[in-house]
Amino acid sequence: MGRLCLTGPPADGTPRAMLLARRIVWVLALCLGASLVTAPAAAQMKVAVVDTQRAVMETEDGLRMQATLKKVFDSRQRELDKKQEELQKEREDIEKQREVLSKTALAKRVDKWQREMVNLQTVFVEYNKELQKKQSELTQPIFQKAMGIIRRLATTDGYDVVVDKQAVPYVRSDLDLTDKVIQLYNQGAPADPGDKTGKDKTAPKATGPTPLTPPAILPPAPVAPAAPK
Image (tube, rainbow, N blue to C red; front, side):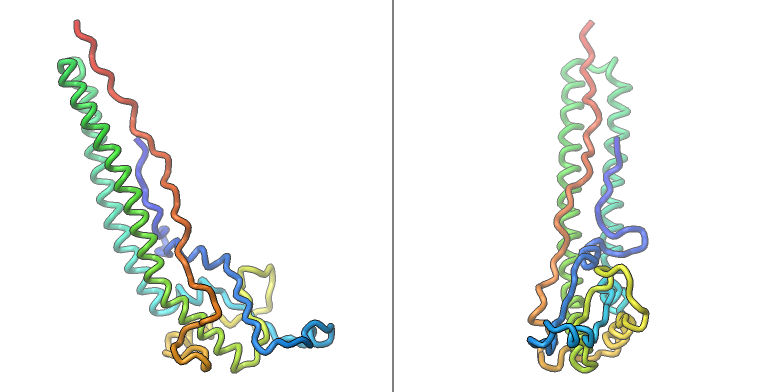
């Protein structure tokens, strides 16, 4: 019987919800006018990059968020492991008793075991949904605040374009603003000065990952009732 494993944070504590941020390209076109279509103007564009995942995960809030998710994930996984071990022992006992149980008694035990296995798989799916929802809830405010700080940096330091680092194959280290974003975040710096709420109104809302389909863990083959002698 395969082990039911939640699709929650991996071993290093990083929530899977943040893997989605690696695929997001944030292009903040600030102060870009029609002149950008000309070659000389384009050559003078001031560009920077930010590792979106690091800018969220390595802030103090991000680290606390990871610890919270890991605690929830570990608790749920322990529950699943305990129940699956119980079902495995029950199955082994049914195999041992199949020669001594009546056909009716054996059929009842097999039916009960199968219903409990189906219930366990249902709980498994629900736990995954719960973890994904929790990831989204905890990540959303951190993500939005980090995006606001990036907008602020772009405005105050005169960057024309800020791109997610994962979207480019190479970038000079001096163009990477990630450490600066993390530092400003931890210092409680305000977001875009033009946005008094501290929210980035132009960026799309951060969303959790598409719900993952749980592994196809099938229950062991039903124990066939012993034929009456």
